[in-house]
Image (cartoon, rainbow, N blue to C red; front, side, top):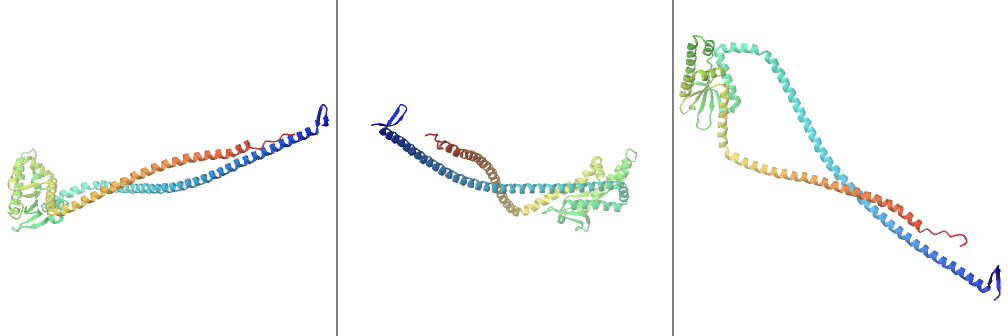
Length: 378
């Protein structure tokens, strides 16, 4: 065939030109087909990525809702526990303030009492002189001793356990009669105050008159002992021992120090000499005897109450044990809450890191799969 195209040394026939055109058309067609296939593959990848991203966003939203719900419940529980703790702490602070206020009030009252006592000390010397004038009168002195004895009995014994100025079957009146339980009889107590003879004894100390003063003092006391024994010791009515109350510790000490025979005479006649201090100890013993007798009479009631009290103590112990369990459970709940809080915080950090990776991933993939630019002349 004759060439129909000549360019320099290149000559092309019609068939060659047709073949060349066909080859170019085939090349273009194959290129178009490859481009469409790549576009379909890229579109499929993008759809898969969009679907995965949508699923991931849904899961993240659900997880965020669950985390918010748990956080709300945890916050409510913490608020309730904190309110309870705050209430207990506030109540404890209020109680402490009330106790401090009461203590301060009591302290102020005591300071006021001390101030009043200091003022009373200033007038004590005048009262002492008045007491001396009172004791100089025998009748007034007897009333003073009797009043002191009555005050001690009133302070240490129950009201129904004694009688003042009681009249016995022999028509003798005793200063006080203490009613002992059972068939022990009533204890007769008489107040005596041999002040004149004791003053003569103290004034005659280390002088020639001391022996006579000692003899007079011993005689006066022995006379009082004999009178008490004769008047107030009645078989079957009173106790077998009576008491002579001396309202002066100094006179009592003088007797026990320098007059043992007088004390022995009192024991023989069954008359016990007591001072205010020893009388208080004796009253304590009497009160214990009365209390013991009353307890024996009420033994069945006491046993019943003790049994009920034992049940109450057992119930109290159970409640204390339950309260201890509640405290232990509260401590364990707070520890678990702290563990859950730490886990939630760590998971939130992981979610933040995952969101950052998701935001960066689509951009990088799209750039990698972007359609290449065609060169000029292709």
